[in-house]
Each structure stands twice: as C-alpha cells, then as structure tokens.
Image 1 (tube, rainbow, N blue to C red):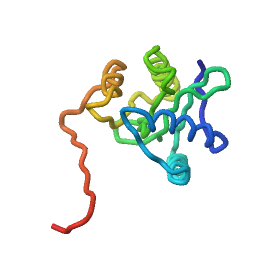
Image 2: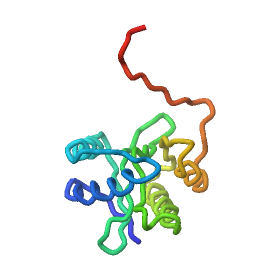
Image 3: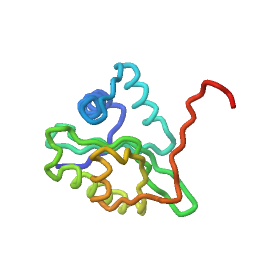
Length: 149
C-alpha cells in the first residue's frame, strides 16, 4: 500500500471511494453527484489543502481529506474526512494508512492531527486505538438557524 497526494485529477476516484465509505453503515449519507463534487472541490480549494490517498497498486482504497492549519503551537493537519473502503476495513489497513500519514506529516515537521468524529461510531474507537484522545475542555457546537432568540 502506498500513500499519495491527491489533486483535482483524482476527483472521480475520490468521489467513488467517498460514496462507498459514507453511503454505508453507520453513516448512511445520501449525496447527489453535484453536492459531493462541490464538497470535494471546496476541500481542495481551502488554504493549504492536503488530500491524501492510500493506494493498493493503482486502486484508491482510502482517503484523508483535510488541510494544514497554522496555529500558535505550530502547523497541524485538520482532517475533514477520513475513510477506508469497506472491503479493506478491519484488516489493519486504516491503521497502516494513519501511520503513513503521521510519517508523511512528521517529515514536514507537522506533529499534530485534529479531527471530529461521532462518539457512537466505530471510527471513535479506531482513532483512540491510533493515539488520538478527547479534549475534555472543548465542545462541538451547532446553530441550525430558524427562530431568533
């Protein structure tokens, strides 16, 4: 398995892998082709985008879509989306991908990775197993609009 940087030339492969991962349990996301294309292009258009793929020969099997953020403590990799094709899950592929990402970042003097996940999904246990921890003092907040209070 090989880690490669992804670009706009890979958008069709990224969309295909994304749909196979996030249309399945436990996410059950429903994306239109246009919504997904725009979302991925937005991720690619961020300042300092870093989109990484895990390849089995020439087949894209995993994605890490994010960006480099510069912070007072140094640069960090903020992952917006991370996933492995279902048939590669539970075989150590995700952990191998994360290890390769950490090595890639370390070579660029980036030591921190941040992300959000749902505590009730298997991904939560995966990240904990791979060295991530919860920041007790932080909370994820949402405003969905509607009535003004």
